[in-house]
Image 1 (cartoon, rainbow, N blue to C red):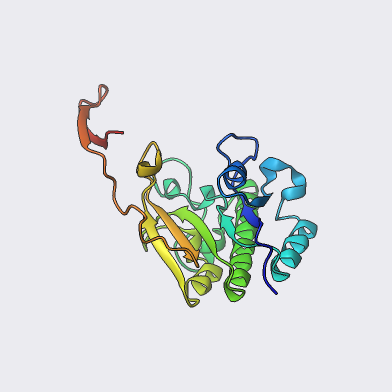
Image 2: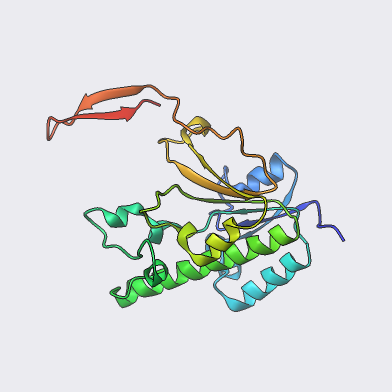
Length: 219
């Protein structure tokens, strides 16, 4: 039994209505037939919904896909929550990885939802790995002292599986407006050519408010 070579599973990749959406990319460039689960495309694509999840799980275990791309929401894992501003929502280690105990009801529900999405994505990718179906997962790069979805037990176990790789790459060589170091976790996909640094020259300017020199990369 082999997977349907024309179907690809997309998870949390944003609205399909965008001209540069993942769905349009796979349709026009790679000639795949994408199935995309993201609430931006309607409530019927919400993987938090148990009935939707059961359908995805059945399709994945039945080998109905030739590959998968997953980009689950990362804002509750954002390193910005460790800076002055929005309060931290998760801890780097321990039970707080799944949500801190001091969260407001609203934040607690938001973190619960994002955690469920992340762990269900990890479960799908684990199934694909066992079935030898290639996949790629995107998350912001983070140091060992920073919050990350990859710190969750489900992803630690996934990263320990045979032939699962983790590559840190930069997005600016592909047209990104900033370097945005990104962790690419993958199975069955060669990422050896992924740019590992920003190739753009630096430039310095003075902050008009503080008159302090600042440095950024020129794009």
